Length: 479
Ligand code: GLU
Image (cartoon, rainbow, N blue to C red):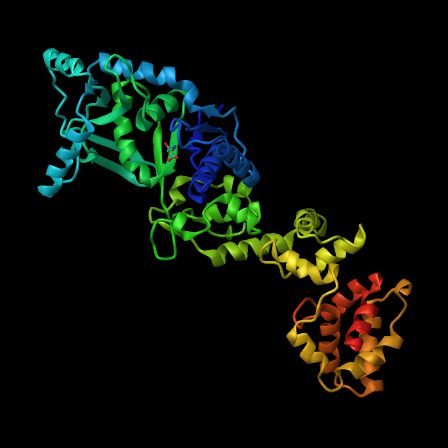
């Protein structure tokens, strides 16, 4: 059995972000390719900002995308005893210590660094306090954070599965890092991100940590923690960031960034998952760009993950989405459109084949699922003609042509086929002496209330069994 175990570790402080979802896609693909496990850990240690509704949104978004996880999600806050135990070990082994510096003192330190044009960092001032000094701070009633020692001359290296050999210098990591929040000196305050991630990844036997490259410095710090805690090391893969059109990291300011937003806009899970796979991964030659997650999983590997940032390309997403929608069987399209129609107050005149015919007609012109609401509307509700349609009906010959067609229309119950419909158009052109183009445009204006739309004859055939061809032509003659 494969020992590959990867995880997604979202913080439930917001809805499922496209960047997190893309990290999930790469983790899932790798796990499936390797026959390993894809796990979830909900990193809810920021108690103020974590919300159950965000956890629900994240789980729902992942399930919607088809990124099923393999074990019960681990809830990080439930593991606080293990986190504290690790901190106790670090204190006992001398890798960690209490720092009593007050917020004011730390701010004065940073200010002095700014003045001297130095990068802000903790100057390790409480690293070597004597027992007397500690006792004195405690007697003052000072609380302490717990810091982990990061020696300036430490050299941290790893072989990143995407970026190749990596090398960090301890002096670039900002000084001894806080691993537990401020608390009374006889207690251990709330454990912080880098510490808890290491403890949890080790406990979950994670073999590969796959996450965004914004975590590179964290990886360097975490490697020091693995060593100090004598835990087995996972491998690391840092994926490129998602960039906006200007080449900057995609952020909330770019508008749509949550998976649920994309869903609400009418993107399909298939297209979004497909698109996210392409954000930073190049499929092998011959595979094309349209594929399912399972197809991608048969070939996914880090050798084809790019190092450069991946620019978000709406055109490509739209194209993929239209490809997915065009390929959906009418029954499946109907299943997805019906809730949208319902929400928009549109009711189907009858069940069964008519609704499927409508879906068949709409499918080829849909870019997003939501377009199916506006496009179905004139079939489900009698339209009010727009300005162009009215102008068309006022053209010379327009009403004459429609008036000539009306008595020739077969009865609703008699049915209508495409050949008969085309024959009727030619017949009217001959009888009424109107130009064919004028007749067709006017018929479209009468049937749909606008001049754009799907194929005219198909439109007509769909409206005929409802009797709507006759009543709409009558209405436009009366207008
Ligand atoms: N909770 C972290 C985040 O959402 C997890 C990062 C990691 O994968 O270690 O960024």
